[in-house]
Each structure stands twice: as C-alpha cells, then as structure tokens.
Image (cartoon, rainbow over all chains, first blue to last red; front, side, top):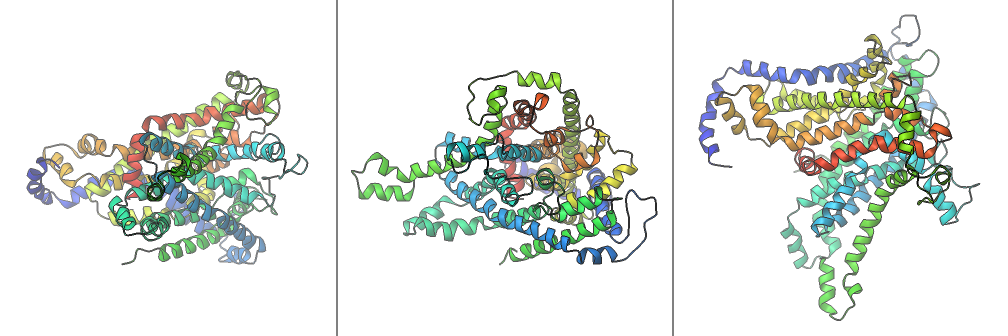
Length: 315
Length: 293
C-alpha cells in the first residue's frame, strides 16, 4: 500500500460520527433490488410450497383448495414410489460423487507439476472449456455421444474395437439400466476441468519450501501427498463434496431430457416424480407434488447438514 | 522436474533419454489423455456440423467430403430458429446485466456500507445455496408467473432467471469487495464522492475480476437454462435455444444431423469466445472470489 493510506487512517475515524441510521438506510437501498428478487423468487416460493403441501391443491381444478394437514405427507410416506425414487437419486449420487472428486484431484496434481509456462496456461484453458458449456448444451452433446445410430461411443465399440455389433450394442440412454451410469459419466466429464481448477488453486497455495523440506527429509512422493498436499486440499474437497452431493441428489433437467416420465425408469427420481405430479398427471396435484418435493428436499438437507457437520473446521 | 527424476538421473548417469524422462513422459501422457477426453465431444460435433449428409450417417470421425453449407441452411430453412435465437439473446442479456448489477450493489453494501442486519442477510443467502430451491420452487414459480400473466411470455423468464445465481453472485461480489480496503472507500467518501460515485469509480474497478466471474457464471446458467424455460413456455416461437436443441431429434431434412450440429455450434460458441477474451481476469476472479470466499 502506498503512503496515502497512512494519511487516510486517522481521518477515517471521522466517519464514525456520520449518523448510523442514515448510513444503514442508504445501504439498504443498495440491497433492495437483489433482496426483492431473492424474496419473490426464492424465499416466497418455498413458503408457498410448504403451505400448498398441507392442502389438496390441484392447479387445474376449479374447486378451492382445502387444508388437509399432513394428508399429503402420509400418502407420500406410504407411497413405495416415493422411496424408490429417493433411492434412485441416492444411487446416482453414489455413482457420481467419488468420480467427480478423485479424477479432478489426480488431474490437478499432474497439471500442477507442469513447469512449462505456455503448456500450463493451455492446460488450464482446456480445463475450463466444459464449465463454459451451458448445462442443457452438455446434455444435448452427450445425448449425441451416446446415440446408438451415429454416436461416436457405439461407433468405437462396434467398428474400432469390435466388442459389439450394431444389433447388441448397448443402449445408453432412454431409461435402461445403463442410463444412470451414463449420466454420471457425463456429469463427471462436465466437472472434470472445473473441479481441477479449484484443486489447482488449492495446490498453488501450498508453500513450495514446505514440499521441498519434506522431500529433503526423505519423504517419498506418496507420503508428501498424504501428509502435506491432501490436508491442504481438504477444505476445497469438503466444499465440493457438499455442493456436489446437493446437486446430484436434486438432478432434474438431465432426467427429463434423457429419461422422460416412465415410472419404471431409473431416472424417475423424486424430482421427476414431483414434476410429473405437478405438471403432467390429472389436474396437476400440486399439493401432493409439494409434499414429495418437501420430503426430498428435507432428506437432502438432512444429509447436507450432516456432511457440513462432519467436515466442520476443527481446532 | 520431479524428485524421483533427479534421483534416477544421479544414480544412473548413462541412462537413455527415455528412461531419464520416464515420469515426465507418463505425466504428460496422462494429462493429454484427460485433455483429449475433455475436447473430443465438442470437436466431434464441430466436425459433424461440416460433414456432408451421407458422411454424417457414417461413424468415421473424419469425413470423406466436407459440406460447409449447413450453417446458412439452418437459418434459411428452420423458420423459428432466428426467433428462438433472439429469445435466448434477449433473456440471457437482460438476466446477466440485471443480476450482475444487483449483485454489485448488494455485495458492495454488505461489505462497505455496513447495513443493519447484514449478518442475517449473509446467512440467508449462504443457506439458500444448500436448499434445492430451483427444483422445489418450480411449482410456485409457475403459479406466480401464471398470476402475472407471464406463461408463454419469453421475457417473463427474466424474472426467475435473475434469482438462479443471485445468491452466489452476491456472495462472490461480497468476498471480492472485502479485498478492497475500507480506507480506500472511506477516503473517497471524505473527499466528497457520493456513495454511488465511490462504488462506480473506486470500488468497481478494483472488483473487476469478480465482476467477470459473476458475468460469466450468470451467462452460462441463463444461456443453457432448461427447466424453467420448458415448463413456463409452450409455444415453439417463444422458446429459447436450449429447449429447441433438447427437443430436436436427429433425422431427415431440416433436422439432419449435421444441421442440428451446426445449430449447436452456433449456440455454444458465444460463451467460449467471450471467455477467451476474459480468461485472465476470470482466473484471477475465481481465485479471489470463489476459492477464498
């Protein structure tokens, strides 16, 4: 900081005399646009959903909604599809979560060692490419990758490696058993570069002399990784685990695009169940859909809170 | 160079070049394999979009005959495409500008204007990141938009879109503004600058990197949003590009594979180009706003 700052500091005491209330009002004027939207489209809808979930509200029905207490919740609780669809979301999370942490971590550790400045920059740029492809465009891209007709994946399996013929080549999407793993692979690909960038930022914050000192003391690369690198990366890893756990439990766009509304399909998770009830079936039973959504969200939040508690900063 | 490399070198001086650089070679091979995996899908679509029609039905990566006319074809022959593109540009443009503007104001206020209740606001914004609002709230957002008469109105999407990334945008701007020393802001205020002028001329230039991150994050989300766009809009003309592309089935005529691929490339390129201009600022901003914050 230049010398100007030294002159500034004693003067700054003067602002304390400025009326606190006036300052607070002008601050709130700055906050109002963001908070108005936040309250209207994030906070209010949640409260409204909670309210709807206790009624027999049907969107297309002309009858007024009646308060039915926990009726929807009891029905959802006793509905095998509710728990089956929760299980599917959990299954997807199990398929997706480890890969989306481990692969970027390996990649980041490798890229971090690249000393050639141009190469290092090029690698980082490529890493960010998938993160810059908007969500739906990633799904469309991989819908084509998995296509049984022209998709390059089946082309490789059939024509290049001769593992399958076109008659028994795997059908990846469309509600088969392969659909969830296929989506998990796509999601891991999507996060590969972006998560690696996060880890690279963490790796850059580890002092070089610390690593050098450990190596001079005779620690091998594995021990350096286990005792120095990994603990330093732990906070970033925890944030990614918590965030990605949340997103993978609440996936919906992918399932709507790849799976549709077949109740037997592995992509028919609680989110799709909710959407199906709210916008497709009968008179749009949004009361029940809201209860399904609230149960799903509550289970998810419970586990997220658990993860946050497990990973809480200690000491 | 790796420590192992050096040890290896010291012990066996007359090793071949390959043995000497073994670890480095393996490392670069693995990195390049990953890079290939990242780049191949996009390159495949790019090549598909310039394949001739017969070649597009064959699996080979490299076509026997190129055909660059698909790009002009789609705009001339798919009547709704221009409109869908305009819809996407309008909705995304408005969303990005408004969200960024609101996030700058709110982030700045939370750090440098010290409003009453700022901890509460911060906590609520942070907590909202852990709740699947986007999924669950769709029911009441539909109701709200219906009440406002905005079902099937493309510009109506802007309202819910603003909030998709609003909380994270405010939090990013907050942590970026935290890097701007209070003294700098207060000295400008004492020199007679208005709150507004201080933010615009002093705060914002210092928060430039974070601004780029917020801009890009919001662009990517709004440009590819599917759930709200497909739920709130039913008319083909009023749709945005992601919904059109997600519904497109490869087949004959207008929707022949290379032609959809051309549409895809047209839609995906703006973000990549914008990023290539802003990448330096983006990486700095990512380090300031996201990783530390």
